[in-house]
Image (cartoon, rainbow, N blue to C red; front, side, top):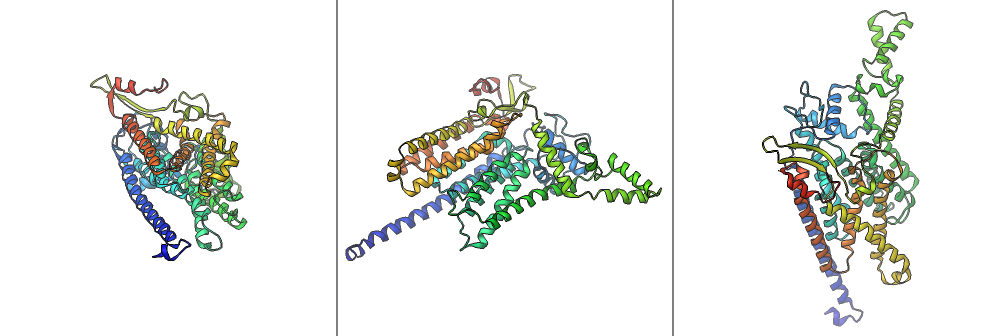
Length: 521
């Protein structure tokens, strides 16, 4: 028997190895089970009553219009990049969506009627459902224990704010999924050695760049995650033994920029005609749009200069003018978007500040309908974070900062007491705190109208930090107790506030009872 024959303790080493294999196998089983359960619950919560309400809700007012313009090939202007709208366009084409005459998503509360809106909401639901298991995988890539990863993913699963965004013709579920997927690929990249796995490393670089660019191509407010990834990659922080090489940086930058530009090229291709967006663009830009006043004037001048009175000559000239260089249109549109974003009025009646988001002090009304049968019954969709999730996320940020302060204060003791894994978790916590802060900074520093859903990218990092703290507790029973309390409280609050996410018709007294804070109205 090894423990008797080997005074060096080889038998104990074998037992440790067996225990380690058993623990790894148990973790893999937990991972597989958690991913299946989380995915099923995510699909169920996102698709439940997806057709309700059969009315225009909040910014469906805008994105429905943009879809109709795109289907007609008419140029329109939006302050956001085009990918999110292109995804809806592809879904509409695939589903056989045909605009209903005289319906243009003209007002919030307008009846959808025969409009085929359900497949468009399905797009948001699919991305919203995919986000939940992706967050679990990100947490595991951060070396968070399975029980902690479950807490982080459950926070996303049970949060009403991301749920509402995942059930309507809105773009934030796309933004969140691409951001989380980019973060996962970046973590995989940082763990892949260049010398021993060069092909895999290139693949992770490309995947990270593409997904990060896709997130930003939905909304510029997704820039926080790609920026954080770029900083860690350039300086080789925490997760990496050395920074990315300059050829790798060049590859990542070119792939990201190329991906971003490709979606604009697709946008210009789908909307080649003059449309409601003409008023935002320069004369030179408009010459490239079919049937625009600028193009017709330029074609007439070209025909006259050539002495050609023939309509055919004018048509050739117009087509030539339509070949305006792509990069100039790309640059002008991006400049216009940045200017329009900066010009968004800060006095919007539902605008909120970043310090209101982190405490969940005010939400945003998306839709309301009083019962015609019983005036004491009302249905509403109120975009508000699950209070347990938002407050728990903030508590996690505060607790981490307190622990960090104590580690710095008593660093000599900590250096001798903490294991390398514990120190790695501290640095991972710093990374997640940085992600939370980086996503808030633009709204702290810039004076423009912002809304509670702008907190979603930052909230994701705080939710991951919550999972990290639970996973870092010193004993398995303590970790289990913390996870059960956390997930149980999230789930209970989810059920209690579900009427505001799903638009259930409930008594006015119940609505009033749900207003835990005075500004939830």
